[in-house]
Amino acid sequence: MAKNKNVFNAPKFRVNDEIYGYNDVRIVGEGVESKVVTLSEARNIAEDMELDLIEINSSAKPPIVRIASYEKMMYELKKNAKKNKQSAKPLKEIQLSVNITEHDLKTKANNAKKFIENGSKVKVTLTMKGREIARRDENKRSILEFIVMMDDVAIPESQLRDEGNKTIVILKKKG
Image (tube, rainbow, N blue to C red; front, side, top):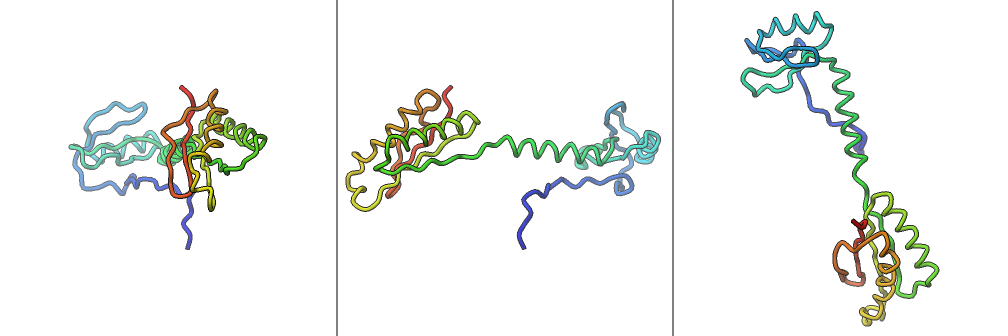
């Protein structure tokens, strides 16, 4: 069975009647003065305000409970988790070959510029086949030309890296 990637792994909070075993608790929340009260008094305050009593920190002395809407709090947590997930930009990859034409190289450079302007890093991979591997230094010409074309918007994050039949460099946004 495949896992659903969109499932939000929210922390489990004890709410209202699930909270037990404490004499005193510290209440916090919007429009509530932070103070230490008995657990039954905290429940009464939450009921009067028509909100939930949510255990935030059980290891504190006394335990901390929040008076708030449980559904609203969970919605905010999900929204923040989704926002943080979206802010991570993926690494885009551009593949080059040794005998790439100048027009194709310009087209790939234009695509890479779009990726970089959108905030992604670009991994440029030059793949060599057969006898091309023996003349590795001569064949790096196309990847070096690509780096020069990208000079106005991007800089190499590191030196060229040889990995078997591939030469790899990662470009990042300038400045």
